[in-house]
Image (cartoon, rainbow, N blue to C red; front, top):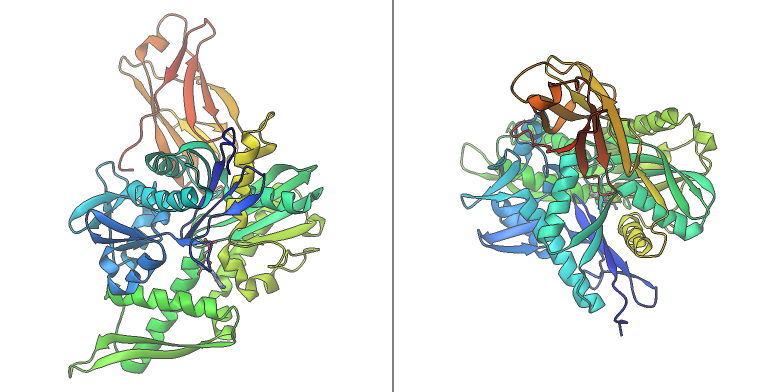
Length: 506
Ligand code: AMP
């Protein structure tokens, strides 16, 4: 029986590929939400048998093959992204379902001619795991902690929060996936150590260096690659299939999106099988038709060494990102007490094999690659409800800057700054216009380039440049859910909050 005073918080790992959730029951016992008899993970797949009907999870996943145009999977990669962006242009055609621009300029899907926002798709997945959790716990979960890839932008985080709210939850915190994994790990072992969390999931790669001391986890540095995940490994395999088929049959499969999606499905199954087996035969029936009308199947056997050769550049990118994180924190690989592997992709043997130079690499048996993140979220949820709150410091992954008309730029929030935070800059060169001055707020997606992700625009009214006020202070605040607020403060005491207007359509 649940004690009436116990209000559990659901920890949810809403992943690109899979979603899982966990909570602490009234007796303080950790519980993971069961999805099937054998599984604790819910595929983040939504099948629409009609525009107003949907099914989530394992049943939906089989529809990737049977009804590819109406089965939305891996869509978290597009959630909270503007349609007009290089990333979307590059990736959208790989899916048989139609990724289009929503009314707000963000990515949506077109199903039976109807525009469905990706926030709604995310909401369906989250609502499904919550319903399962409600049944398993026999309570009605109202509060949750959700995880996001460490490299998510402010807008991507906002989209996840809005989806959870639409699913009826109040979001106590959003936490970076590797931070959640570190929390799980810290509670598993109570170490006093430096650990590097290597989190390679379906859509993103995060590397996070943490200091764990007396159960308190502190992020020292975080990095990674927002565009590197299991799907990229699958793509390499698909490319290999397509080239092989072209060589054997002289037929090009690239233009048929449905076939490409079926190949991607086969590639993922093959990749997963090769984590245990040395060779994996596959057959994808009827992938093409010859001039004489004859249908052709794709039959092939991929070996583990061949797979490892195909994905080597991707593995190297992961290693490079780890090196960057260590360099940022001025820590050497041999000073890291343990490398903790999380994310489904770390089951691939070549990953473990490549990570040499570390004293210890966590084993699959001690650290659960798929459930560690949701357990970490549940731990944080439990701690937030305790007196004294959570013993956790999460950080902002990317620097946040503002730009005045004319191009003058100020970095306001530095990368790896712990949240919650307040930062201020003095805006020295505000133009003396009569109209409001637009100030662009953006994140630097990639620290090494000028790749910018606009968060929105602040408008500074002409009143700020009248009288003596010429150089007001812009104050940015970010809470533990990574919500950003802006204020303008003048030495004379003027203090106004500014609305951050979304820069629509990129
Ligand atoms: P996650 O986002 O942590 O659920 O990870 C999902 C990714 O892990 C997907 O790309 C899966 O194909 C991949 N994955 C899951 N299990 C395995 C496995 N046994 N071997 C290789 N990759 C796997």
